[in-house]
Image (cartoon, helix red, strand yellow):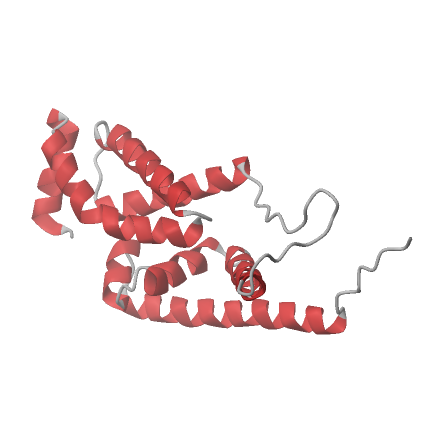
Length: 195
């Protein structure tokens, strides 16, 4: 979105605390924002909670401050909410019971565990990238946005977004290659118990 309609809605929120104008901005931006948050957070529930926090902070900010772009402001707030989430949480995946023994109850459990581990590696690699690279990758692939739409959201030119995507891909590839090289040089040792 953008342009005169968005500016009018933002003006109505700032001057009159217009809940219908806020509802219209919410209707327009919530689906993309949820996709973005679901790509950054470990569960759908966490993403939903974060989206509520984002819109609450946006309301508080928009009722007292002139905003040029609702989208840019929402995504900035969303990145801050994600940072706050990870500061408060530690991501743990329970693989063992209290005796330290792994349990794989059904035949698909092993495959799901491997997939979860691979996704965890990719997520850590993305999280290790600079924030700008994380954002552009998530907007492109999690939100399935065009370069033009990403440029609008990030308030940059299409050429700079294309270059940013290229650099983000290269950095992610380096992180994943580095992780794979580390794994091949240090294979996991067997954890046999001694009696």
